[in-house]
Length: 610
Ligand code: M6R
Image 1 (cartoon, rainbow, N blue to C red):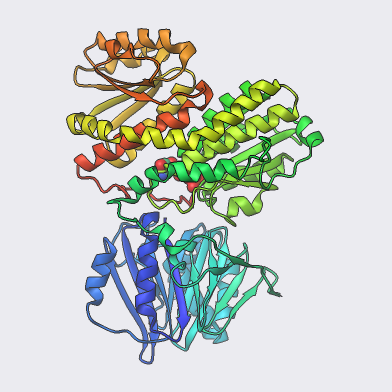
Image 2 (cartoon, rainbow, N blue to C red):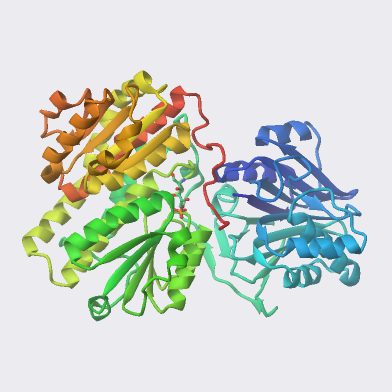
């Protein structure tokens, strides 16, 4: 989704804005632009396509100035084009605005402005904001007051950031439900959609709250709350270093992030296990009484995080014996779910900014549920709106296709399941100890699993041109199938399907063809025999079978055409290891097909619109 960066300081903004936008590329975009205020007025440069096109459009030109704003656009209102790219300017060309999110009442406002003689040049909702801002600026001659009056008229979910030719070292921004941070540097200050854009320059940040208006100058960051009161927000120090958001020698962020999994799992697990082998959930302070009073758990998330939730349901129900519902966040509100104060609502989100997840969380809050979130980005909106937060330790995930966030979400859900099981007294001490032992061993086993990379790369080389791929599995492997299949389709654009293996014969098997590839996930010991029957069913239709199973099942080599053997752990923990070859398969297939792996078409890293 759209990315925003703003700079006010002693240096020329241009290079800092472009470098910041580069770091926001991972969010997904189709055009980019910057606005700089210099002694001649507002300078706007925009281009469709990658940032390289914007750099080319600027060429050797130096724009000078002390303040500027930049934007990467992910089209919502109007096709990708230079006219629709941000920044947008008013009719006099003295005010510029960049915007993330959507303005819901833009059509009505546009009509009124047209009637007043305003002429529009784009199809965007953003242009309505800049024209309104101009109207209020003519009355007030003050950017902050004009911004207040403008945002009072606009409905929706957005961040608006503006500069004015008449106020050459000032940026004014307003946040309404879309992410915004302000970072403090020495002799300069920054604004951005997320940390990655500022990490190279500053690590002390303010998390801008909903309804806040921020005024940024080279010397100061001033924040006003919804009631226009001057407020002091807590300054937060970001522990992530700039290198954590670099490729570190890998050709793609996705491959780097796949390989980081042993380390981030180690960090996630060790943060929650005491020396005596007890699970202590970092950041969770629900009392044992409160947890014992729960009647059910409701997990809500989107995409990969939802797939983690499917595994979570299975494991929490098995270990802690509490009923668990799992919902796709965009659907949750529409089924009027049974939720009350005895429900624990768990939102899972890497970014913590996913609009669907946030709205579901708010609905659960309205219904009185207790709210816990499993989030990666510290201080994100989901984290801030939750009663309690359990942070995963995945570090910055840049590739659009989620990998290390998923495995750390699984690790967190295992820890939570074990914790709840112990609190409820439904797990035998030996079993508890065994799980703890296995959890501690997971990072090493993930490392061992990564050794299959060469074999998976060879498979991908052989089959990357197949246009139909199925992922089948039973029990936890069926949950895993969804995640494996999503990885393949999002980065290689192959039509891939995930299905519970036993369900195929009820219809889907009809579309299987001789060139179909079937990735048969067979990691669950007690379901192995049944899974082998399903493998035979698809084999009989001449599909090509690649099986993924524990190394203790060598006889799988007789059933499937190819097998990837995995290190052994308890069945419940196997999804965390078995996803690794599936991530690698998607990666190498996409690479063989020449796809843009880290920034797949049509997708955005953080989906901040509903
Ligand atoms: O940031 P979130 O975890 O809330 O994002 C949810 C989904 O948009 C995300 O997992 C998406 O499905 C990934 N791109 C999949 O790789």
